[in-house]
Image 1 (tube, rainbow, N blue to C red):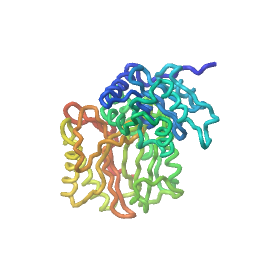
Image 2: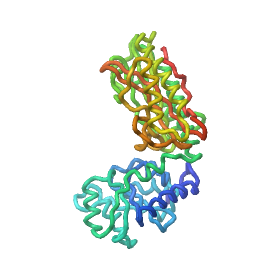
Image 3: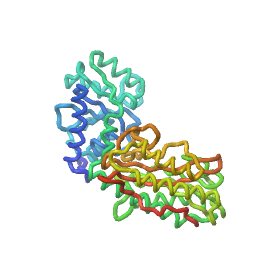
Image 4: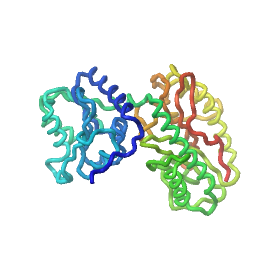
Length: 389
């Protein structure tokens, strides 16, 4: 039997609204077709979340067609039919014989489609940064008279301002983040393996919160003494010890949207150094949250943290946050000096105030936040404290 259409996270009108924004940008750039290969942008425009982009695939937005066309390998086509809002006929499967072959691959099917649509000599937008050099060379060789325009990050910048429907999903993801962080505080203790703590965290990230399950397990960073000077390391084979500090970063996920959350734990009484660092971060976070509102720049937000933080005797070299949403990090705006992106309502950010001082000492705290009409909404709701275990 044919696979059925699955439950949709958003109504059809929401996807058409997003596509209209993309087509407006296409008109401005005078392109008739837009080949999208970034997996997060595909999710944004279709609802597809299956991780199949390790082989050639592409979403093609045509300026004069309401729905895009998704071309991907045969074994993944049923997932596209099931997950996306699109009609079945707009999902095109290329044969498995094109996987692992040296000369022809899925990009040939994509190029054949462009030829069939009479676009071989027209303006075609491509996310060149997301394609391998061989794929780019094939596009240029088989579309020699087309005007190929680099449109990398075009859709990503459109994504930076969320709809109210997206914000609602972000809130659901944030609730899962909070539940997972609370579960970590419940289970971590001396003698427990880091791996066993992560297993409990993963279980909560999957079960979700408020009746809304997690739909993907995002990367978890967990480190305990003496590895707290690392920022993105995974868990180890070690066990927690009395006196250990534990840094944890996780994120709940709903329909591709992730809400990052970081906290620091101490088994036993925290050191004096850790307390001073924590107090400085809390002061900096409060100053930052007071600064976030429409019209200010990302640089303004970063400076609010840095100036307050430095008054407490500390310095942070890394940025203070970044746009978040589908796939966790959106590579657009950052809370860092010199980023003049102006904040708008419904932009969402991971306000990431982690700092790593020495090879064996660092500290983590963060929130996922939304810019409101007049200020900021903190989406995550975990206490801003050093969790003493």
